[in-house]
Length: 436
Image (cartoon, rainbow, N blue to C red):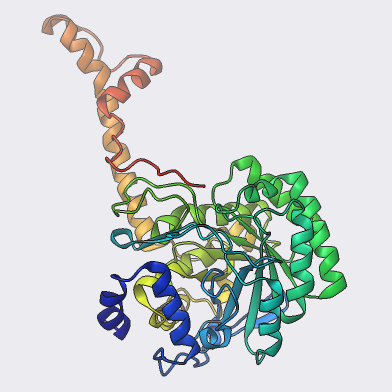
């Protein structure tokens, strides 16, 4: 057990979540957070180049942790390959009423309804201007809550932060700003991104522009977004933000709080959406995978499903910054074990028809598939015997013996099969909580 889990977490868990976050920023700012000796050691197998930028490793700090760009260099010093600040709006705003950040300890998850609280683009831009520029820094842009012209807000963000960022993110996926997710529709999204790209060319030429999307999208939504991204030749996508869904199985006291859920419960759904966008864009658009990453295995799964880079945030609440080094070491070990020369070679390997690469199936999924294969013959035998058993119950034994066995038509078999092998009832669990 590391210093964070043994010394800090037992104390922090009794402090209000947002207050604890403020203390973490303060500790980083004053260099009070212990750092692993090998945090900055080079690992060639993890080095990669994405949208024209060279990354020391693919593990990034997601937006939301350092909203106001107070500690980007300190975060980089703990081994992140890149950091993303924000979300930043043109004008400062306080965000939603407190409390608005909740730790779900039993699920190692987090719910937030922060509402783009930040100091505004002018203050953040001045902070970035004074920053000693090192490493890769992304700037996540949002709109002010009551702004009537969303495109104008994002354009202002590009003009203010574009000159100091290595990439820009158009965030239209937070569930905590009214009407924001409506901008993911095909027509409004194309109009918005066209304005942003024009502003980028005017104020920060050559800086990549990425789109951050929600995990709560219909198949039609995903197809529309992918079509716009391909049409405008966007530089990349971030998949995904927090979810308004509440998966069955949550066991924490605050699970019904409004807001976006992040952490392990988001891993599976966000990875599915990531894979969907990888297929829809045919691997032509670099993707950053976010949602539920808490180990090298999680990061590797995102990469195999199409992510060129990954980001995390919620896991730091429970594991501390020591986790970054652990993930890098585990990821490098998995890449070597599967015969990849570097991380870029593993991107999309779960879909060799798109990537041209392949990788061994994850052990857990292989075991699950094997169990399913074993179960299918047994279910088939039960289904096959069911019609004969039904007939035997209705007729005397002598008459039944005189009949030819197992000669029922296929339709009868399919009708009997559900009774012989009923569908498993879902486990009891809490209902989905409401969310903004």
